[in-house]
Image (cartoon, rainbow, N blue to C red; front, side, top):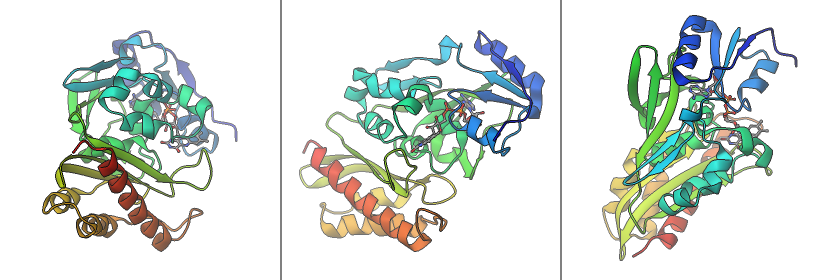
Length: 287
Ligand code: FAD
């Protein structure tokens, strides 16, 4: 449980950090809160020779809100919970962050580290897919943007190159009066999800105007349930349309059998999380 040797670098600016990553090539890794990377280094599942600490980069720590929500990669889960402006604009972020680990981890763990990590058990990636977020990615070669829905390729495989950093995340602020819910089944406080679902929707009377559903830890990657919106908006909301959306979600789940349960059990629980999240979001939405 002791990591291998590594050089530790603490840049003061984003451009210094990007240069250090480029010079380190495949052997360099950024470190943010360290709550995913350090356990992996202790298990020798990650053996970087150079760690580039993002902790002193103040230009990655911001929350800006107008019609769009923009969050810097170094914003911690604790900061997401504490921001009243963010809660007013997009309350599902606080709801989700409060279900991650425990306060000690949330004080250090960052949104950038959580979405970059590629662990299917991380909660923010599915939420980012639900919100149709875009990741801002930078390297010494410049800037590019990748949608959260296109970013994840497999467990711990993402669209990120080793020399790149996620510097921020942006998404359109959900409509005023929207309904939302993040439902997470876990074995105990502080655990990763056995199954979890994020839902954001808008309603007018009994009609769902738009809906977005995404899933955590129900496959090797987070899953956006593309079909759910057309099912939920196809007819006035009823147990039938909700069941249809649940079935569409279950159809794309492929969880591993593991210590959290068999694949069948986790799929069934995934369906339950989707149903509960839709019902809670409907309850909260202005009609
Ligand atoms: P780090 O650990 O520093 O980095 C993680 C990975 O992302 C590394 O590969 C690193 O190189 C890379 N990285 C970091 N920042 C960037 C960046 N800006 N650009 C590009 N790459 C970057 N998470 C959950 O979502 N849900 C849980 O229920 C949960 N439970 C936990 C329970 C325990 C006991 C522990 C220890 C952790 C748990 N976590 C959970 C993980 C926690 O939320 C981590 O903090 C988070 O996943 C990673 O964020 P970090 O800032 O610590 O990143």
